[in-house]
Length: 375
Image 1 (spheres, rainbow, N blue to C red):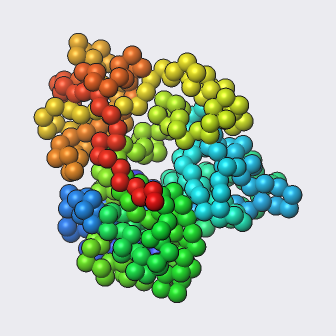
Image 2 (cartoon, one colour):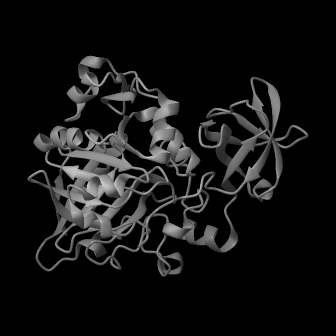
């Protein structure tokens, strides 16, 4: 699941030394040395996060701060590049959205939070340099653009997350899902959002680089918190039915095909004002040619990314984009794209695994119910 870049050219996050000390299995991923798992193993890390709390290093992601120049509006400027409702954000609110291209394809997906004074973006690790260049090319006249790629970023996820973090920063207990706030943790000013990519309740904690390891150790000192690597991060987000950039969404997929219309601002679904708006608006009105769907294979066979999706009589109608074992379900699951005539819940399909058809059915997503805390 990583890249094959020579280790000498790989970057390290502020938590690299801690990962090694904790026995993490280090692999190349998105240009970084990252832990794929710890000694407990992916299955245990996954299930522990669902029942207690897991701590993930996501410092490889790109953090960017946007501040309006005099007489300019940061939210209105950013809306020229994304279909989300950014001008509607109140201080402390956050949104999920995408950078789109002229064909309506997705250049990257990202989180945007308003602090009142500026916007904070979190973009994907493999895309962050391209995203930064994209923003600079189109918005430099309106915005001061500050990459904060050296900062730490941790995700504390699971039902115990609020109580664990709340012992060190009481304010976080009352935060609702998809909100953020500046918080002091162990004498370090952090920016905390109640968010994450596991389907669980939890937080993402942006820290100064020199405070990241001590805050991580502070959280791991609680017996309810265990370190979690990339392997369980992937299985958790798959169970939650969440897209992974470069797999389930990319420049060849539109937000409509991906089932992300909910993330497009209501007025923007008809008025546009972002790259590829004409294509996206047409797909909203007429339906996209294909759709992302959830799939449950029969038995125990796992259908990995790239597996052909076929009708029961063998006609190929799509491909799996993410597939694996769902520990919470104790069975295989997958998602992928099929033509819209075969996307309805309950449709019987076949997954062509090693040349043999495995019966599967289109099912609703998420596969595991989200447990976000909305107040």
